[in-house]
Length: 64
Image 1 (tube, rainbow, N blue to C red):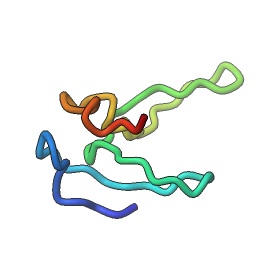
Image 2: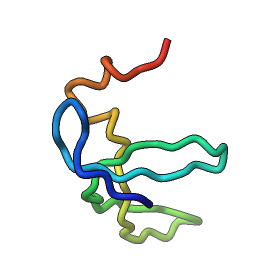
Image 3: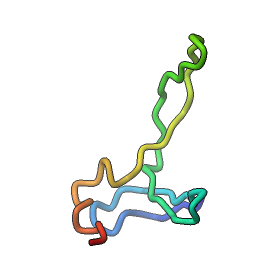
Image 4: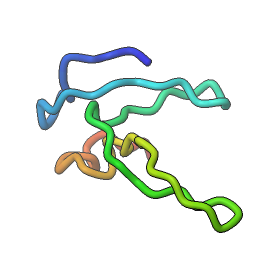
């Protein structure tokens, strides 16, 4: 993961991660706690939210 100082639009701190496809995706810098259930057993995990899901200016950055 690579930390970027801030989103160009909303100024939130974000991190970049490279996906298996080779594309890069911006994530909110602070992970949230979520419950992961597998085979009926649950555990708390830390997950990162894609920044485009929380950025108020996400539409400005979408490709056609």
